[in-house]
Length: 375
Image (cartoon, rainbow, N blue to C red; front, top):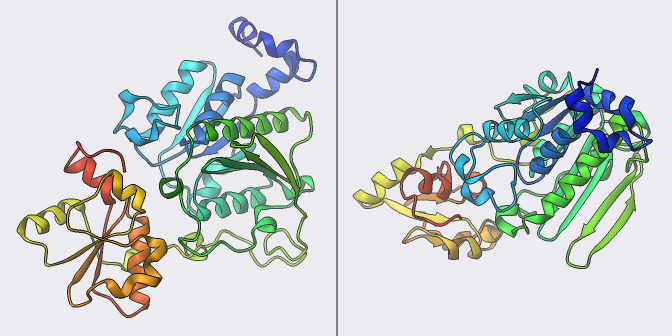
């Protein structure tokens, strides 16, 4: 039952025939899992909290960085350096103290996804990487829950609802195989206008609420594309693929898999790595090798370490011959992901004297030189 304080809070919902007091009570009894509290997860979490969804789960293992604040509006300056989950939970409970926020400070992986997602009605994908997108899709299908999908890129965004149990396709029907590693730039590489994830994330929250209330028409079998520069929305039809390895007639994916391996993400467990503190010691002693920066020219222009050979990940295949192979090759990027891909590529060419710098320039700023501007 709703308390008098809740009835006052949700008064504008009560006047909507599609919601009313009964619908608000339904929201209070509902639960949504939000994977990520970044650009998309911020508006999703705040609007679901404001709407009165009774239990909201958050999954995130990152800490707040100053470069997040341009678009991750659930976080503030006072939370820089602290866990995103703590920041998000505090903000959500400030918006609405009548809800429950369940935090999972971990990466969403095949090892924990089922356990985390099992007790939620809807799963919202607020991530920015392909392994987690496939994972959120697969676990949603295996648990029979809708997956509210969103993605952003520069000035464009898109949303859909993947729910084969409701008659629509799944994410694999739209994208059967992931793009080649490094072929699709991340937000850090390509940039994104801060307000864009606010628009797409708000739309994801809207679709989740519609599903919980069973009102309107969710975009099942549709991909909604938003072009912010031209103020245009386009709708593309998506069909359920009978050959889909997950939801098709003869499925071959019947359980969660190795999503990093499926998407070509390098396995760093077999890769030689050092921390930025160890790199600093080597630089102070006179580096016994060459330092390669795998970031884009735009990122390097903002902040860079002295004496680096600058070869963006996207150019490594064409330019790796420029790297001297008679010395140890230390590779860094923004956070360690692209540099790991460079090391893996070089290893495939028989160049094995590589060392990945864990944490990249972000860790360098946090642990060594806080005066550096955001990468």
